[in-house]
Structures are given as structure tokens and as C-alpha cells.
Image (cartoon, rainbow, N blue to C red):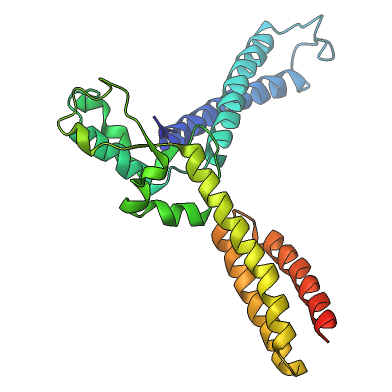
Length: 250
């Protein structure tokens, strides 16, 4: 089930605690070395690990090594989890709805994690285009027969309203969105070619090109997960294609 708790606040507190423990051990080590580096201290060799004359220093270094290892391991794990995308609100709502309507799905005490919406992350990274997110907001779209998946027999025998449950083929929805994007792309390539052919005047043709570039950028933002500079690069390439169309039409 999608949605795992990263325990961000607790991890941060533990990191701060480990950081403080390492600092305390470091201060003890510095104090010990300062005492034995003074002129009044006993004459010992401080330049060798093999002939260490201060067992206390070896013990402090071993303790620091353990703490730093724990700190670095947790820090890397915490950083990796922070980079994971948050669970979409619609998915959290679906899980909460499932818990409300399914008897004894899990213990009530174990459902509390779903309330920490800001701290839930996706275990499997699957970028979803804004277009799909928009379409999935529609109940009709989610329940369409094109991607309806047959519910396994007995899968929801404890559900009070099994007839209201709907499973969908994720691959079919992806294919539908892909086909939609392809059709829109073809329209954005073919339509300006014909419009420029019947449009006279440089200013009017430039207006047509400007309009299609704006529409293209909007479609890129709606149908893909491209970053801003990637969208601008795609728009620049599209502009070059439209200029070529303009020369052909001229």
C-alpha cells in the first residue's frame, strides 16, 4: 500500500542528539590532548597509533568512531528519504477511505500514520503527469470500463460495500494518457502548417506562431513532468519548426 512514514521530525531529533554526543566526545579528546601537550605533562610519544601511550585516547576515538558511523548512516538515510516525492493527496484520501469502509483492515491504533500527510513518501518512484492527475480527479474517469479491472473473488469479503470498489489497470491508463499526448502533439504540428498556409501578412503569421508557442508551452506543462528549462528548450525547438513552416508558407 502506497504511503510510508519517513519520521522526519524524529530523525532530525536523533541526528541532533548524535551530533551533540559526538561534540561532547570531541571536546573530551581535545581536552585530553591539550593536557598531554603542555610542558608540565608526562613525556609520551603522541605521534604513533601503534605505540599509543594513552589508552583513554584510544577509547575516546573508538567511541567517536561508533557515534560518527551512526550519525552518518542516519544522515544519509534521512537525506535519501527527504528526496522521495510526497504521496499525492488523492492517494492519501483513497487509503483513508479504504480504512473507513473496510472492516478490520488493520488495527485502529495502526492507522494513525495516514494523518501525517506531510511526512508520507512514495516507496516506488513513478512520475505522474499533471494531465493524468487532472483526469484522475474525475470519478467517471476512474470508473471507466476501458481500464476497469475485475475484482478477485473473495478479495473484499469483509468490505461492507464491495460493489462500490473499483480496480483499474494502471498500464491502460498510462497508454490512454500517452495516446492523448501523441494526438495533441500531432495537432500542434499539423494545425499551424495549414493555418499559416491560408494566413496572409507577416504580422498575422507571427501572431499565429506566437499563439501556438504559448499553447505548446502550456501543453508541455500539463502533459509532462519536464522541468522549466527543459520546457523552454522544447519550445525553442518547436519555434524553429514553426519558422520553417512560415518559410514554406511564404
